[in-house]
Length: 92
Image (cartoon, rainbow, N blue to C red; front, side):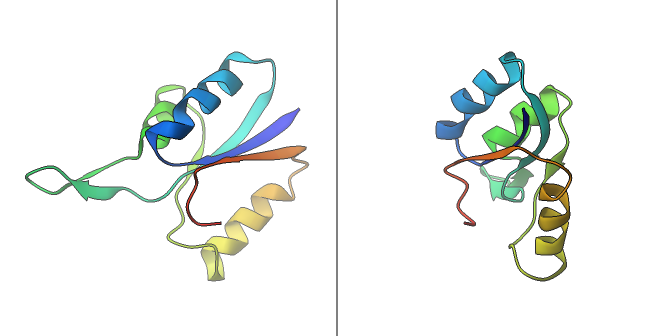
């Protein structure tokens, strides 16, 4: 199956990892945008985005699902995607 995964925190990482190890094709990963973290408040990717990037998966990080960002997501889902798996995404 062609899968889009949506998730952000550590809680969602095991599910994405299982999908990566499966025979399914991950079309894209949706995650929330990088947020300031740590003492220097440097921008850091979410745990899900970090895993997706480490596995060379395409990542989309819209601020919200309205307007042009939402249209990008709709366009992605219309590309013959079979299923969207959502685990603690936060924007839906």
